[in-house]
Image (cartoon, rainbow, N blue to C red; front, side):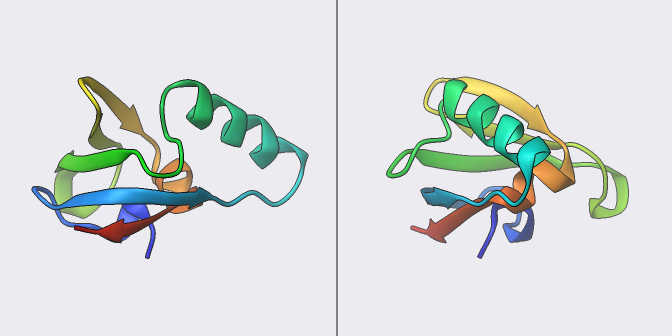
Length: 79
């Protein structure tokens, strides 16, 4: 299951960050830099209109907005 598939209000734990290709490898590094590391707890706070668009996510005490393509790269397990 990836982070894009989780409904708002659900908490999960990061399992891994997938990447295919050089561009996604850069995004993977950026996600790790802001705290999306294996074992870290995350919570989807809000999704865009009609469930599309940016996804608001809490990681630790920080809140980030991710593109759907970025959220699909983060493999998680719900708590």
